[in-house]
Image 1: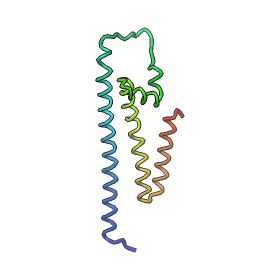
Image 2: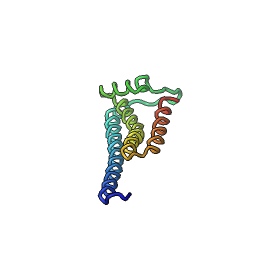
Image 3: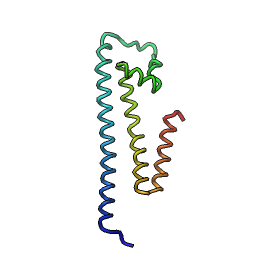
Image 4: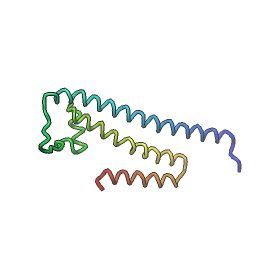
Length: 132
C-alpha cells in the first residue's frame, strides 16, 4: 500500500528536526563547556602565578575534586578549580546526552532495532563511567 505524499514529507521534516536538535545539543554543550572552563580558569589562574610547582613529589587532586557531588558543591561556592572540573564533567556528559536523545529519536521513528543497539551503547557508556 502506497503512503500519501504528505507523510513522506512529514517524515523528512521530522528527521531534519531530529538532526538539527542533536547538532544544536552538541553545539550548546561544547560552548557551555568552553564558557565554564574559561570562567573557572579566570578565577583559578591568577592565584597560581605566585606559586612554584614542586616536581619532586606527586600531589594528586584534592579529595573534594574527585567526586561529582563534591565538585558541584565546590563549584557553586566559586572555587575556580571545581568550576573547571564541572566544565570537564559537562564535556564527558555531552556524548551521553547525544546517545540518550538518539534512543528517544529512534523510539519516535519506531526503529526498534536501533533503539536496542543504542540502549546497548548507552549501557556500555554508563558501565565504563562507573568504573567497570
